[in-house]
Image (cartoon, rainbow over all chains, first blue to last red):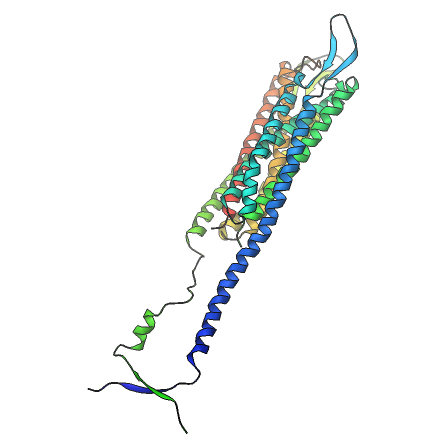
Length: 207
Length: 204
């Protein structure tokens, strides 16, 4: 029986070779873990900023809606037949404003849990995508309400000579001031929504 | 001199067969033409087509409002009864804003083409998403403020004694209302564009 056999000079002990290969694998694993932590770190920061922006937007939208809701004024003089009053319900556009900004405020409250989920799980894609899509829709609603009310407020301040629409602010000063404040607050919330959408998009992107 | 030596039995199989059974440590995956690039490219093509449609909607809105002049056939010795978009500052803002939005859409077409050619690049998509969001808000502001004035022109307001002018200027009202509707269509397109960019950005 002939066996093939050879002679090998054993140089270094085999344990040194084994440990160096293990180090390669461990470094790769460590790099993977570090990458996940770093991505999770700044995404978590973005999620916390998102949560704080949402809280601020809740405050502003509730403020805008309530200021417009309570924007009534009764002039001190009256005739035998009429009393001169102005309120938000005299203008369908302002009614739309109050209702839609209230809807936006309640949406923001309902979206707070999703925002918390993105803080706890910074790398999850689904909550951020849901927030981005619903924030886009609510952005359009807020912008619609703010812009329509701004057009009416502009008309109330300046009037229009071509259509014979008289500026009512000269008589109803307090009413005009309250409605203008509400419109400015709603416009600030529009800026917040744009920031929220951009934050969600930046946090969504891959590396 | 003593050498350490040992005896090894070489098996009958060749060494290349043994190598083939050895486990590989790291396998490089080729992602360039995998499924994720494929569906993102589809989203980019849909994005490009939507942009073309939005260009049409926005420019139609601006053009219709711009040409919505009407002169009534009767006139007195001192006045001629005319109505045009430049009589109402909100409609002036509408024409300017829709023109800016149309111009932005035309300029964003090359970036959309870049996302078709390189479906996995995130920078063009992120840029498009941010700019589209700003354009969406701008478009919506123009559309809804013009809608508020159009509503007033159709219905008037008894409490403030603002008379509805549509009863006299029918054509002007029709054209301006049509322009408002067209710009709302552009808003819908923008919303879909923003959501598309968001979905195409996400990781796997």
